[in-house]
Length: 355
Image (cartoon, rainbow, N blue to C red; front, side, top):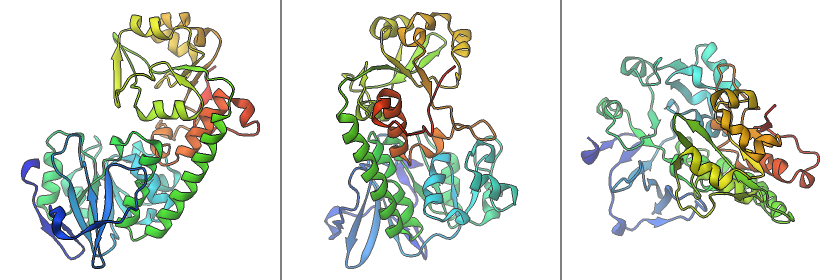
């Protein structure tokens, strides 16, 4: 139904395509994010999601008239933005609470204040209607979503969040302003983002003073395929900004590369550091999966690191929950790994050396 999205005009939000020549002006409130912006006309502000899903043909426009008091979100990566804004109490439903790492939202679930909307990670319509939300924030990877269509048909507005398409760490973090607009906390969102940006840029400048650039390998093998970040991937940007030299820096892929073991070995067997090993949290686990890992110099020298330092009570990696909203912490971790002399007192938040 994506080609003919229903148009909803409700008491707090109107969602419809509006022509660019209608007099709205970009308010320039987003600095790094490419996926959304704000426009203003005669005091009326609208939120424009430029690419609501991959390769979307047109943006979706939301005119905000009243803050959302009862919200359902569908990704754990949405939760930290809302928690930082001090609006955790407005989230009333989430699909599969066991995926959550945040202590705040886990506690709300235990107290019956946050409803589990589906054991398989999909939204159960009956449960959704039961929590009576004002809106749902969802993400769409590009396939037809019958569930989201049903939500809209039920009269519940769906706000598309496509922060996962951002290539810049600060661009993704800036989506806190998206939630700030929905929750009427725009000034707080701006203030939080400015602090994150300031620290990220400070750390980036510090890393640029490093005298050397350790080479970096990433990813692991699944089956016959090695999955690793492309050269324009969010992770690769961190490696560069932390003062490293990612082996696939010259690659222009923004997503993930799928290579053979032999291709990776040929290019990266002598890399200084191995950062990011998925769910493999020790070198012994790595060898159990693939014995040939031992032939990489980073493995042999014990320079293997993973984002496994913070794991939630249900086994979720907090890196994939709060790391997207706190790129300053991720960058600090990577600088500590690559150039420990630059941050002698720093304790990593997400990353640890694998035993």
